[in-house]
Length: 188
Image 1 (spheres, one colour):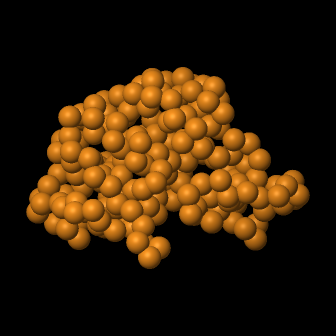
Image 2 (tube, one colour):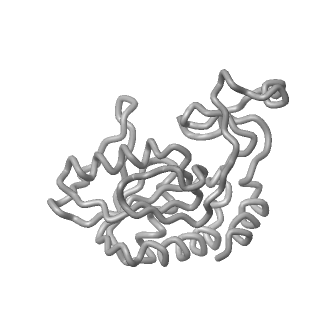
């Protein structure tokens, strides 16, 4: 799939939003990728999951792990298409942890899958969880890399789209953006 085809999917599903948004990272942006809107359609999930699985296949993982909530749908589909086990990390007292009896064996080759990466905080938390349980992170895969390739997880990172989306610190907003009420559409 080309970047233009993927962006068209986001436009067709109203998942590429324009306005004034506060990202999970605390940064502000004029654009927001609400992947959940695109991923509510199973044919879209299958198409994006297949393309992302193709990119991640060479990494040789045996397990896919995704941070909840954003990475759940695409992580499970990538795992399904690769024929791998799927687990997820989730919040407990404001921090991502491994729960529900999920285990990671020492040396287990694990792929981290996320929907959108801006600064990579949730992905890094998930990498740290895998390593704390003795697993080996073979790489990271995401639908959208909003960092324009600036994030570095110390492992291979594959994305469907790499974009440089303008982001601003809360105290450095341009006047036109400051004039628009900010909304926080993502997960907290």
